[in-house]
Image (cartoon, rainbow, N blue to C red):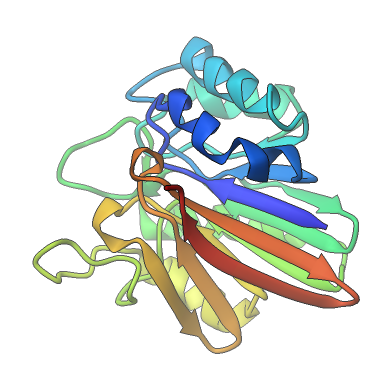
Length: 219
């Protein structure tokens, strides 16, 4: 099984052509938030449908720059990972959209206690699949994937605590454009592809009981 994931798309759907080959061979595409720039349902649908031109099977969650109505759209389309779980083969995929609180008062922000509750609700729906893949727009605090340009960590302590307690195999995150990269918390490999316009994306392979993931950049 091959999964491709990217986020912080911000309507940059023209970039899809740069990874057309990857998408065409994927069994599933995961959109990890910020589909739009302060957009609602129409803008989010435009992004989802553009991705479906390359791979028809999509799961997604909203980022902090997507308006709250996007949550309902993704849920009604049966593709939401925000507070929800989807089992695909041997993989449980669950997650949380939006972000922790920012100084910018973006459309979809949560207090840490709320992020914890959303993740707990999603995890409660998992099915004890062999692999757990967590998708969280907000990165865990004080890691290599939540640093601003000046080095300050701005991720969520609640997300970090959740990962440390649950130890999913993988965590796909985003939100902090400056922190494309990878890190680990225990057994959990954490990947932030950065903004899609810069070419970052993640490929996950699951075969013969083994899961692997890597960060790639379109050329």
